[in-house]
Amino acid sequence: MTDIVDELRWRGVLAQTTDEEALRKALADGPLTLYCGFDPTAKSLHVGHLTQILALRRFQLAGHRPIALVGGATGLIGDPKPSAERALNDVETVQQWVGALRGQLSAFLDFDTPGPQQAVMANNYEWTEGVSSLTLLRDYGKHFSVNQMLARDTVKSRLDGEGMSYTEFSYVILQSLDFLELYKQHGCTLQIGGSDQWGNITAGLDLIRRMAGNQPHGPAHALTQVLLTKADGTKFGKTEGGAVWLDPEMTTPYAFYQFWLNADDRDIARYLRTFSFRSREEIEELERSSAERPQARAAQRALAEELTTLVHGAGQCAAVVAASKALFGQGDLADLDEATLAAALSELPRAEVTELAPVADLLAQVELVPSKSAGRRTIREGGAYVNNAKVTSEDEIPSAGDLIHGRWLVLRRGKRNLGAVEVR
View 1 (tube, rainbow, N blue to C red):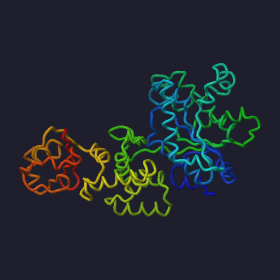
View 2: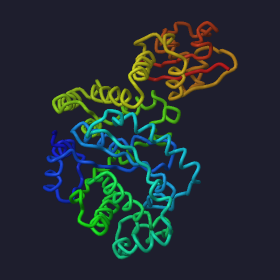
View 3: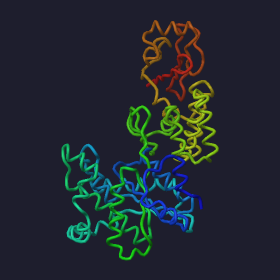
View 4: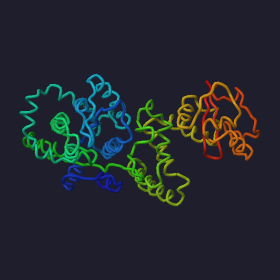
C-alpha cells in the first residue's frame, strides 16, 4: 500500500496526528477504515471542503476504506464559528441539503465497487434522532469535562465576545458520538478533518476509550490537515462574489475553472500539492515551469482543467476551456453553446441594451473605456474588437446578424480587456 502519511507530508497538508508511529502501523496492517464529516449548512459543498474530500479519495486510492459522513443531525446544530452564533435551519431544509451533499460526494469516492476499499455513506441523524435528552446527558455527557470544553479555542474566543449558546457548546458531544458509532458499526479507527477540528476529534477518541470497552477494533487515531489560506491574506475559496461552490447552479463550471486559472503565482505550488492527483514528478515539473515562466500560467491551467474535470466532468471542462480560448480570439465564439457562453460572459463587465449603438458607445457602456471619445480613439488605434473581429470604423454599428445566439456581443479592448453586451 502507498504510505499515505508520507504522501500527505510531502504535499504539505499534514498538520497533526495522535500517535504517528501507531497510525503508520495501523495503515500498514490495513485496510483501515476512516471518516470525515461534512455538515449541510448550505445546499452545496464549496472548494474549501475539497482538501478533506480529496484526502478521503487519496486514502481510498491507497487501499483504505473511507466513510463520508453527512451530518443530518450536527447540521441542525452547527459547529461553533469563532465569531458568532450560526443561524439554525429547519429539519426539512437540512435533510434536503443532506441529499444534495451525498450526491456531490459520490463524484469523488467509489461507493459501487465491492471490496475492502468500497466507500460508505453515512448520516448521523440515523443514530442521533432516537437519543433522548436524558440519555445524552447521563450516558454521554458525563464523559465530557466542562473545563476541557471551555479550553477549546473557539469557545474561548466566543466567551470573550458575545458568548455562546448551550446548543453550540454541546456540538462536541454530538461529533464525538459520531466517531464512537462509526467505530462500533464499521470498525472506523481514524477521523480526519481540518486542523480547527483537532479538539472535536480528540474528544471523540477519548469517548471511544471510555465507552468502547476493550476497544475490539484496536486504538482509534486522529489526523488533521492544514487549513489553506491565500498569500494575499484573504480566505481560501472566496471571491468577490462569495464562496466558490461545487454545485454548477451556484458557481458555473466556467467560474469554477477561472477560480483556479486565476490563482496567485505565490499560491499555485501549494494548490498543486494539495489538490492535484498528478505524480510527484509531474507536480514538481509544473512548479519549475511556473517559477521560470509564470506568465504562461501552465500550472494554473493544468490544475484548473484537472479539478474542473473531476468536479464537473470532462465534457463541461472541454466546453469551458473552449470558451476561455474563444473569448481571447483563439476560437470561434459562435461555436460555443449558449449556456457556456452565458456563464462565461456573466463573469465580465457587461451592459444590457434594447438596441444596438456604435461600438465606441458600447465600449463606454461596459466601461472598457472611460468615454465615447475614448472608444473612438481605441478604434482608431486598432485596439477594439467585436466578437474577435477588429473594428476599423469609428462609426461602426453592429448589426443583428452579429449577435451570438441572437443576444450577445463580446467586446474586447487590446489583448485582455473584455466586456459583453446583451440585447434584450
